[in-house]
Image 1 (cartoon, rainbow, N blue to C red):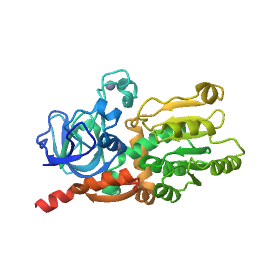
Image 2: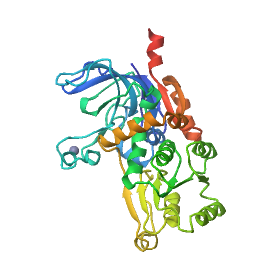
Image 3: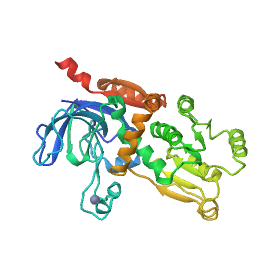
Length: 351
Ligand SMILES: [Zn+2]
Ligand SMILES: [Zn+2]
C-alpha cells in the first residue's frame, strides 16, 4: 500500500509501497486511513533536526494525527466494531507504570509515539491498540477529526494554566498556536495577544478572536501593547514556537507572577536569565506534552462541536496524499495553517 516515509537519515520525505498491517493482533484494531494532518513533529522529522535525528530510526512510515474507519478488530476487543469512524491518541503508553496508574499516562516514560517510534498513519491503513482509539461524533467532519491530536496539544496547554479572565500572550502561530488562540477565546480570556512574525499566519490569527498580533521584532508595537495592559504584561503565556529568542522575549514581558506553559520544542538547549526573569519575578514555568488521556479529548470534542467555523479557519489546506511534497513545502514557507492529506482518494482511484 501507499505510504509516506522517512527513508534516510537526512532532510526530506519520500513515498513507497509499505507493508499492509493486515489482521490486528490481540487488543488491536486496524484502521483504513481517510485523512491525516501534517504536524510540526513531522516537519521536525522532515528537516531531520537534532531532536528527530536522535529519536527516529529510518525507514519509518510517518504521521500520527488522523481519522479513518475501523477495518477489523482483533481478539479481546469488545467495545469497537468494523465501520466505526475513529481518530486516535498518538501516544501509546504502558498502562502499568506509576504515571499510567495515577491518571498521568501522558507522562509515561515507556511511551511509544505513532509515526515517531513505530509505523505511522501516512499510509492507507494502520494498526493501533484499541485503548488509543477515539470514536468520532458524526457531527464532526473528517478534516476536523483528522486533527484531534494537535487541537489536543493546544487544549492541554491552555487548560494546564487556565486562561479565563486573564491577559494571554500566545508565542508562535503555527497550527497549534492558532488552535490555542481560538480555544483561549472560547475559554474566556480577557485579552489575547499573539507574537508571530509571519504575515500569512498573522492574517489567520486575526480571524480567530485575537486582540492584537505583533511582530516580536517590532519594539514600538510591544511597548504600545504593554501600555494598554497598564504596563504589567500578560499573566498567562502559551509558548508554541520553541524559538529561543522568542521564549526569552516572552519572559521579559511577563507580568510578575505569570504562568508560562511551554509546548514548543527548541532545537537545542536554551539559556534563560533565571534570576532576573523567573526567580525574582515569581514566574511559574511548566512543560506540556501530549494530551491528558482522555480528559483533553472530551474537551476537544466539545470545542469542535461548538466552534466548527474556527476549526475551518485553521485547517487551511486539504490535498491528495500524493501531493505531500507540496504540503511540506507549505510548512517550509510558513504559508499555511494546518495541512491535511487525503488518503481516501487513493482508494477511489484504485477502485
Ligand atoms: Zn501532531
Ligand atoms: Zn506507563
